[in-house]
Picture 1: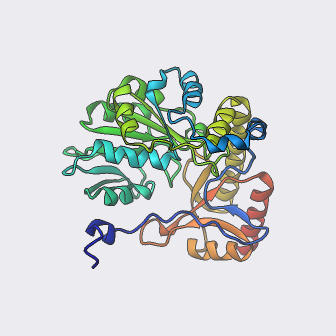
Picture 2: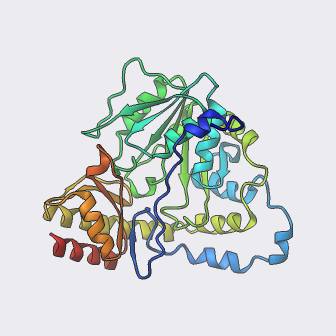
Length: 346
């Protein structure tokens, strides 16, 4: 063991991002990217950028972008932190709200970055099991410094009951970060909890509903006290000029985003019905993906069969969730190809 490297870093298993295959003409349904392009306003904003301005540092406070977000969410700009992807916001929260003798909680299964953040911080993880029925049963003696509550959940896509989320937040002694990466595809959100409860933050991203996964931009909303602590820890210039301009343009075109969301929701309903018609089990989804249990073949076999046809879905080997695969909602044409392949492979 190299004594120059922290033991927790040497012992940790790093986060494994979804595969970005280099295969030609693939149907890519594995990383929950939006199949439709971002608002044309994004291209227009990028076209007006003067390359000469890139010699200058960007606005460290993301003033224009935070102003747009504050108007959108009916809060003050001091209640918003803009981050280099929501992952940066999650990491900053672990640094800001967890003492060295603290702990980090989350549901299991959930976003697989959370235990990695615990290991990076060098503190214990306190997962709460929601397997196998995907229901939430919080232990009566549970405590943690910070709890990541993904809603809608990943990888299941399910939406937790808001009244139950509120009750949990009101009684939890630490900070609750509600990770709403997929919330624009859901029927409700928890933003009002972040704007009314002193220990709650809501984290969002432009990667999914705004079709800007390649931009890497997320943000947090909550009390000025919690958000102010995070501003102390963030990199001075964490959001570059290009990202600020593109994100501002995308956020100002809400009709475009909502139109794409409706298209994905319609396709989600169709794919759910078609898969159930094939005998698959499909978790009720409020996201832009489906969590499914195939019929007749193992998930590993389905994954490999689809891959041979240049259709990529997400599969995690393992004793628990290894029985399932996750399918991103693509275009109708992509879903037609997927369904045709599944019928031929049945």
